[in-house]
Every structure is written in C-alpha cells, then in structure tokens.
Amino acid sequence: MNPSEQSLIDVWRQSLVENSEVVVLGTERYPVRLTPKRRLRQVDFVFEGNKIRGLEQNPQTKSRWAQMARSGKKVMQFLSEGRYVANVADGEVNFYGKRGGTEHPSD
Image (tube, rainbow, N blue to C red):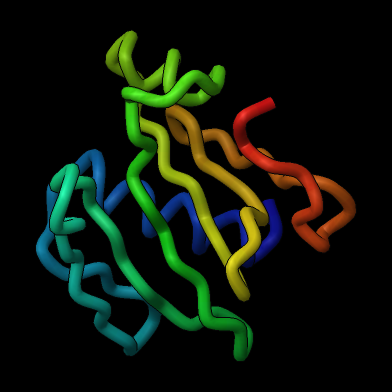
C-alpha cells in the first residue's frame, strides 16, 4: 500500500469509523466538521502539498457509493481542486480516472 492510500484510509477510519473530532496525520491535526445541510462529516487536510477534502458519502444520492452507504458501509469521497479523486469504501481505496480524478463518483 502506498503512502497516499494509507493516508486516505487513516482519514476515513478516524473520521467515520472512530468518530474522532480531529484527524491526525503525522504531526498535523485536522478538525472533522459537519456539513450544515445534511450533517455529513467532512475534513480538509493536506497530503504531499495537495489540499484534499474528505467528505462522508451522502446516502440520499443515486450513486452506487450511496447505495453502499445506505446498506451500512462507511464511504468517504475525496476531492482535490474541486474534483473527485478517490474514495474509501469499507477500508478499501478506489481512485477515479488516471490519478487526475476525471470520473465522477455517481458511476
């Protein structure tokens, strides 16, 4: 497992599985917030110089990831520069497109 995969899993685990209020990556600490409308967990963090947002999957959408969330699995989407780049579903990392994040998670 490469370091970026491990970091995404760490963010997913601390925020969704352990319900932590703060995600710790190395020496950095990032607060876990709730989105105003749907109260989904969200954490903004920096990895290898990239600003990334981890966002709990909204179970009310029509995507297969939302279907997994409705079935009780923990799913978190990761965005960078406004584009979906990856997700972690039940501890497994899924990257979109060719590292550039060209696909949308509603597939």
